[in-house]
Image (cartoon, one colour):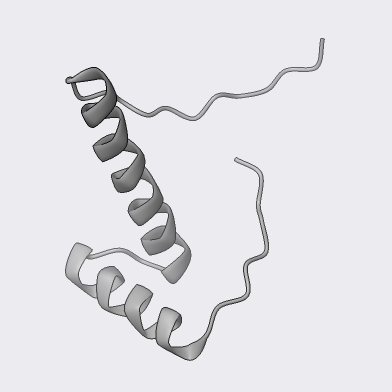
Length: 62
């Protein structure tokens, strides 16, 4: 997955740290990814009525 630089406030970093600890993740970056995927799954369930798996797509040059 491409890496994106995100600037966070101290409060946002603290929130991600709590999520990291609750979910047993190794890093704050993993906590941010977990939250994003969790939200995407919830939205896709609302739209389609079913859960969807999220997989990383490897981009290959054409």
